[in-house]
Image (cartoon, rainbow, N blue to C red; front, side):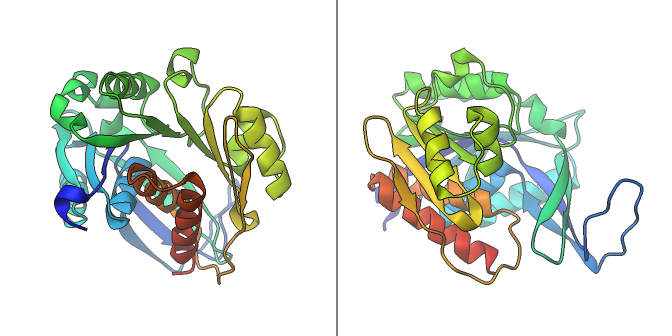
Length: 289
């Protein structure tokens, strides 16, 4: 695929310097657990999804913010290495870069604490730059930056005729003004329950949750882990994509790989079902490595 033919995806979102800790289990309140090791990792849902979309073949432009510190320089270097256009990621004085500490247990699950830092200081006016939207096929957002930033990005995208995909993670309430600008809602099982009030415990209940959410959003994707993926486009029958059997190493980052791969496929004009399948397979490869 030549550079000129690559679909353009715009990502506005978070960048975190992740400290990954490997341990036999995650500590309970007041408990100290002895771990196996730790390592730094590029992260933030925005950054991870931008890199995943680039690896899936999209030309990616990212807007966000880092601090003027070593963490920020690490994050910018990793975006550049992945081929992401980071010209609109600003360095903000007076704020440390976003960071997180994530503990991955022996079962492959994880828990994390994030500190937003400079991610709260993105200048909404920077999103009005027309070159950000030139030729863009999709905007991808997450909930790790304040909603006023997402709202500004969604409004700018709509003015440019660019559809908006929201990976609503972590969960938080969405204003009606912002929700009305979202063309594709993507949530995991827990977030789907929180938004739809439908308990998601298998693919059938994931479909039920997607149906409920499709009353508010034209396109809904519910990722249900080992149970697969459910998707629905308003006016069409729901789609169920079975999970890919793999040996689980770690689930950390799987949702971001799914979202970035899905975005690249949607931006290239692939059918909805194929986008779900490609993203599902990419996430399966990620958790097994």
